[in-house]
Image (cartoon, rainbow, N blue to C red; front, side, top):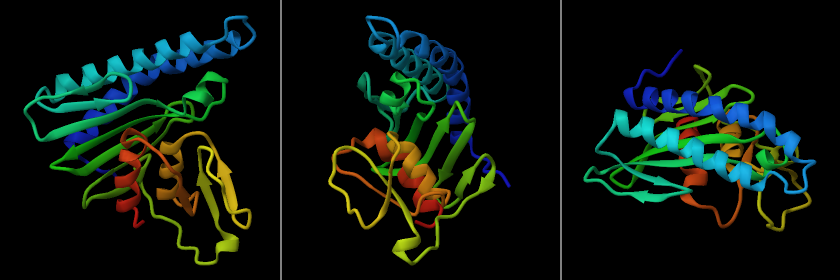
Amino acid sequence: MKLNSANINVMVKACRKASKPLIRDFGEVEKLQVSLKGPGDFVTNCDKKVEKILINELQIARPNYSILSEEIGEINNDSACKWIIDPIDGTANFLHGIPHFAISIALKTKEEIVSGLIFDPIKNEMFYAEKNNGAYFNNQRIRVSKKKNLNECLFATGGKDEINNNLNIRKSGSAALDMAYVGAGRYDGYFQKNLNIWDIAAGIIIIKESGG
């Protein structure tokens, strides 16, 4: 089963292109961990490089759409449609050579998120969804967990929130992947304070369309 959508195809193409230098750069991060300067500036440049490729690809495909991205802010055009981009969600993981981060793109139309894609380039795992068309993981339909007993559930969170010690909790360092995992039934739930829209936009539609 596959979701055939023009906008999803645009997002897939942009993510695939942006992921190539990202994967290459990730291979260099580990070497920089032992240097005196550290990988901070290198990772910032990676973020900007990925963002530039994403924006370029999205603008070629949809020149009238506006863009909101974590690094550059807003590009306002006349269209009621807006791409919402997080070039590297899980930057701290990337910075420390931990292979758990994602590219996140969502499309907002008339104040509603109508499609979204979260791509983990290291594991080659792609989660995506479109309004009224379901949610998918690598072309397979996904559903949220149906567990009812909290003791059997596994939850994800992030930041510095105080958490309930009676729950099984994970902190992975990537809000986008946490939400994608909820959509795929890997996690049973996710909660976190003080997030930006680009952290969660794609995850919102993926969870909604997977029954959450």
